[in-house]
Length: 135
Length: 390
Image 1 (cartoon, each protein chain N blue to C red):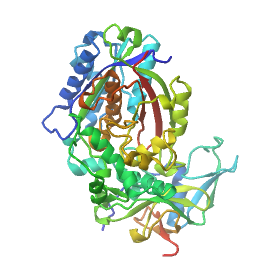
Image 2: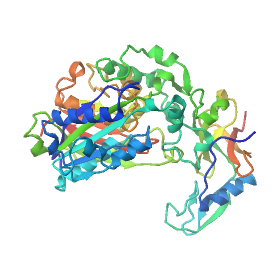
Image 3: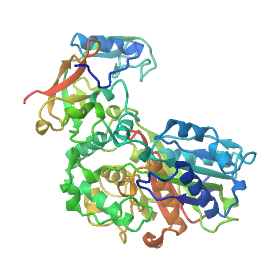
Image 4: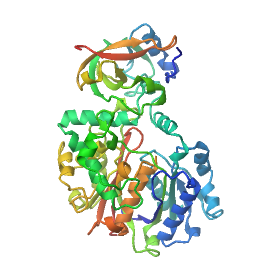
């Protein structure tokens, strides 16, 4: 079955991140000038304006900062997925990212521990998703 | 700078589902009403600033390219036609641009106009439009988020950190509805109880159906004038006293604190630049869109303690007859969400109340009001103080 949901449209500087997800590695930028950790990937360092970055691999663990389970009126491409639970994840490295928690919605709560999983949705894209650690 | 410009006229058509109403016609009706309300002839308008419409990109582009100048017969009279938009914060951005034009001598009277017709979209298309506007394409759209989920994110974390109850959050819907009952332009004017809100269907947890705004057709307009000039044509002006704003994020996932946003910073700037203190504020015209936004704004602007806003609203203090009337047009939760017009409707109401033209919902003894706006995924916090005393 073809995948008909929105896919990322990478920028040249974010391609290493998406390549990493295909290898099941969750990467973030570290500025070579000021050592700031950066996510999502940026063209210029938001702290110092530098444009040289190294890529580091995150542990893939973190907590649920907040979440909402969509029961009705999702974007049309997600109609068959309800209920599903988009969540803002706070990685242990202190970076935040949008994702979904794939567990039963009833089990999800703020500050719950999660770890990354990788959903190879197409040949070209893998989306990092998260599951509860102690479920 | 304080009180040197004022809203001198407002116009508005009823919000709701009006498939037979012309989107251009409602814009022109609101504009002519605002110009007449200011006591002006249309030829006295020097600049037209349209906000954005989302239902039809062709219509939106026509607004950029001076359609209203021609439709109002103002060729050669108007010096500037420029679209100004920041989504739900357009009201604040439009006022800042109007102030700049007037204070730089580019205009004496500026017409602000907004018109939206979501009923031209079928239901699913309307849902999908709001799953793209302000939603980062690369980092967030692939996860299927929408505005109800974003409202859910804020509400869930706010309840987690403050201990606010379901009823505390829902109380805003009831307060807004109590005002909308006396607003003939509101989409929803029927009784609404706390029980009905919390027992309504779960849409995006923890938000129930009545806690989610409904898209509406609507149009509104304001005339903004140099205060000295405006006073020659009308006795009822809403003077802009001060303004504070801050932009906190683009992506909701990158907002540092979804239970606070930038309201404290924006309010501190506005009150710092004003002679009016928080205790002098008679009304809080807060941009709602989701009920938790009002609770956060009330707390962060310094009107109630952190975590206490729900109790305050449940006790009726923000309803008709209360000590701090809030969002007195009913807000997007009851007047309807007209896109960028949702915030403009709150601004129109702020001015209308200060002008003494709010009919059965007129706030007695009103002198000073605080008004807020916020765009996109709560990307900014815009706080303005208006008064009817020069």
